[in-house]
Length: 231
Picture 1 (cartoon, one colour):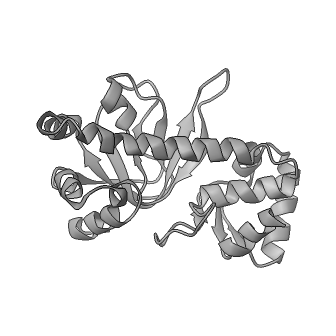
Picture 2: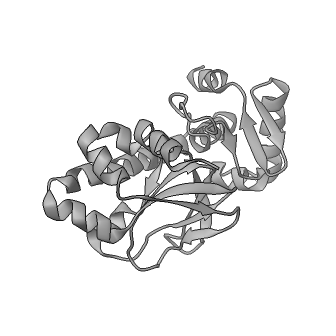
């Protein structure tokens, strides 16, 4: 388990807060609580009332969506440094997604009252909080683009890299290369048949680029996988 000091360091050096001024980082981290969640535990669900923000510092989170006729189902996997909950805080509307711990996880929790405290003193702070949304938009645009890849092998590779947090570059977070999703879930996210996903994953494993574990995939060579997309 991470200490509060170690958790603050991870949050400060990865993801959203690393893009903000040091003074703002201090304001946020001084108001955060470090909370632990067991594998399978729900942090919040789509439709829940608005609340505070959560930043992952250890473990993994499955992001569930239900925008249309189907769902909820997992559409993405968060890696340390990722924050959520800003949309509900900004708009006052219910949660649009759900978060569930895919393994034992620790999160920094910035309560809604503390967010309001920060922005009441400096309304410009909303611009920095909105950077979280900007990052989510970038990820969603990239995911849509990847799903337009015609070649099913490359499409599967792109999905694996996105889920591992290393689609365009490798993260400094130690757990970025582990994906807490099953073969069936990978097939759904890559829009291929389960047998097709299984065949692709076996080939990638035989080449030494991934390792398949029980309901988990470990990326061993992210650069080699990215090279496949460039070929």
